[in-house]
Image (cartoon, rainbow, N blue to C red; front, side, top):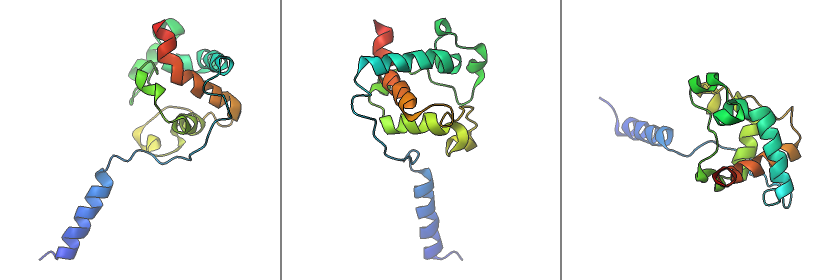
Length: 138
């Protein structure tokens, strides 16, 4: 016979395991002005086109056909939802890539760029991602 304690414990475990809390990441803040200033957004655009567009760009930006087979798919960041995305999350995701959960176990192919970009460069990319949908609708 299963005890009430065991059933309660199993229920609690299922609730915690099935919650949609999202990943845990450090709450860092960008340097003053990085998200709003056009020069940082333009630098982010340049870096995005040079290093990110192969997987995250649109076909006209050089998106590789192999990116169509990624699972999970690589977003192209043209959704207006990215304007409201937490900058700390985007920074963390670019910096850590697939090396952290839940992305590691989900099969993400996103490289970790923390060793390749300075913090300022990553913040510039974040600034561009947050305005990308506006820029592309012009």
